[in-house]
Length: 418
Image 1 (cartoon, rainbow, N blue to C red):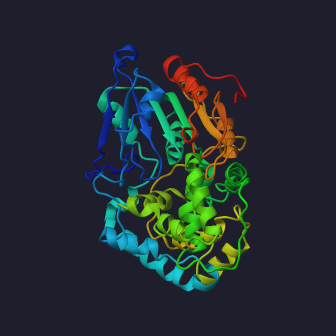
Image 2: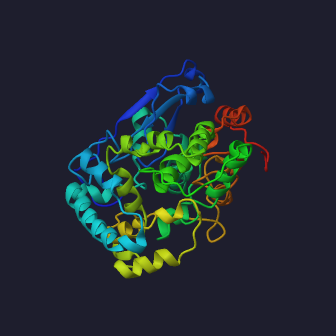
Image 3: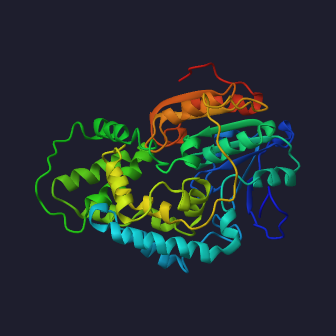
C-alpha cells in the first residue's frame, strides 16, 4: 500500500490484461505498458487498433491502477452505483444560486469518501511505484510505455521519479503536470483550445447550413445537456461531427426530438463504476482540503466568479469542483513535486521520450505538450495538425510511422516535425 515510507502489510491488488504479439520474440519479448486515461479509463483489447498502430513486435500490457475498476479495493464514496449516478445527474451547476447546496454536498461527499475507504483511501494516487512492481513481475527492467491524457500524467510522473528505467515512452493528450499537482485551479489551462475546436467543427460542418436560433422552448432539452453531453463530448472525436451537426441542425430548426434522445442522458453515466477519478485527482494535488487557498460558501463563490473563463462553452459548468477540492478531508501522503523547466533543470531519462499532440485538443492543449517537451532532456514533439483529443482521434499514418520507428529502433523525429 505504501511504497516509500513505513513497512505496511496492507496491499492493493492490481489486475493486468495483455494482448500477445505474433513477433514479440524479435524484441526480446518486450512489453509496452499502456494507460488509456481517466483516471479510471479501461483499455479493451478486443479493439485491436492500438495493436495495429504498434505492430506485432511488442506485447501490450495494461492494468487498472490502484482504486480503479477491478483493482482491490476499488475506490468508492457511495454505497451503490445508483447512488453514484444520482449524485452525478443531480449535481448543481449554477454557482450564483446553488453555492450553498454545492458546499453542503462537497462536505458530505468528502466525509463519505474518507469513511468508505479507511486507510486505503490515502494511497489512491498517481506517484506510487506500482508500474515498477509490474515490470519486475514480468522480468523486464526497462520501461516501454504509452499513455494518453491522464496516462500522460502517469507517464511524466514515472519519468521524473524513475528516469533511469525509461527506455521508450510515448505520451499524448498531454496534461500539465505542474498544475495537476500544485494548483487549486488545476484545470485552468486545460480548456485553452476548447472553443477553437468548436470553431473548427462549425466551420467544417455548419458553414453551409442556413440556421437561425429563435425563442422557441425546447422542452426538457437543456442548453447544459446539449453542451456537456453533445457538443463537448463530440469535440474529443471529430468522427462524430456529422452526427452532431445533424442533431444541432434539427434542434435549431425546432425539432428537439433528436437532441433529447441523444443528449438527455450523459455518456459518463455508463462509466460511473467507482470513484477513482475523485480520489486520484484530490489525493495528487497539494492544494486540496486544508491546504486549499479558499474555504467556505462565499469565499469559493467569489473565487469562482472572479477567475477568467478559459472556455465560453463549458467554463460556466465547473463551479462545484472548487467546493469538492476545498472539502476534501483525506491528507496527502505522497511527496512528489513536479519539476518543470526553466524553474528546474530538465529531467534526463535513460532514453529521450516522444510526445504527440494534436494542434487543437479540447482538454489538453498543445501548450501543455510543449511545456512537457521542454522539461525532458532530448524529448521530441510530433504535432499532428488536426482536432480532437489525442492523435488517435483522427488517425494519421504519418504519426504511426514516427511511433513505430521510435518503439522499434529508438529513432526520434526531427525537431519541429508536423
